[in-house]
Image 1 (cartoon, rainbow, N blue to C red):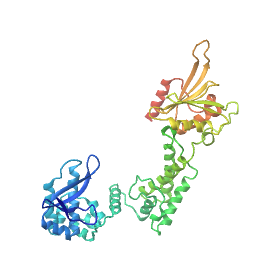
Image 2: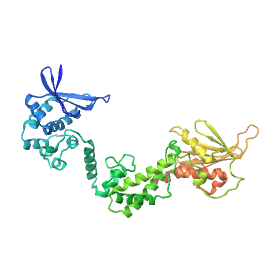
Image 3: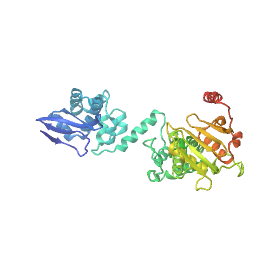
Image 4: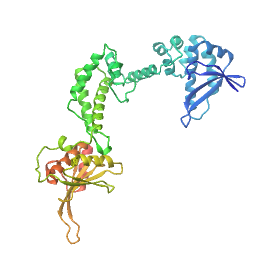
Length: 420
């Protein structure tokens, strides 16, 4: 039979139970192979119960010292009960100086103590008993998170000033740099908010007019990494120039905010019409502009476009790519059957082929085609070439890129590019 002898209001601080007449300390820590919490117990004496009941600081110190033993047990191993019992007298019954000396020799969970109000400065100087004079039974996990975030920055040699910290709080990245940034002015002290807003205004001005386009090669909601890098570089340079006192983390979070917002705007709009945003502005005339096109992928799926519909050819083609593109589906073709020409896009190889019919098949003979290849620089390159083809056909592509007559030449060109 198990009875709870003593428990604090916080559900995670270890409880004292009596089982089959024996006092035991029980705590939840870690998880098993199914990610369910594990529970550990080990015996204690009556003298230990007295201290646990009356001295919150010693209770928390014992918890902090036992947790590494629980971690060492892993997902299925037993608690090292002898090591846990060996901690009882030194932590609960020894003078403060001896406890401090013990904590300089053993592993212990610092974050638990900080979350429960420990004085961080005293902890770092090894005065754990004195640090726990301000301990509270309630936990503040955010305090421990902030401490560890600052320690990680210090390990990188980065110390935050007041404005740095305020900028990171504004974007919500003070604790976790991987968090998607957002604008949180209420998280900033009123006295620092005007300075933060000047930093944000610098960033906004630096990327005004820039955009992050879609990259349908990677799915319907994917965006162009090249555009992201260009915007981030522009914002970084402007913010560093105008606010040289800011540390790298503060500058990075501002550029991350600008790029994330631009990405959200791109994802919330329909697939772009490349004929109005990229490519050569040359007017090839209505004679060469395509009126009917066939789109196909590497799986044999087809989609047709006819002039006069509600969508342009480029917008509909990239929507088709976004719907169909996958790791095993990276070759897409756009073809003008009437003119006998088309483009084949090889996303896996950053290359493109233009195909023109030299001679129609007669009497059952196969048609004769001319195939020319070119390397492509990212999604912008694909968009530009496709837009030119839609407006002027294969002949219009002569002035765009270096067209090679066979695949071997293309491979040599790719190796030269990759070696640069």
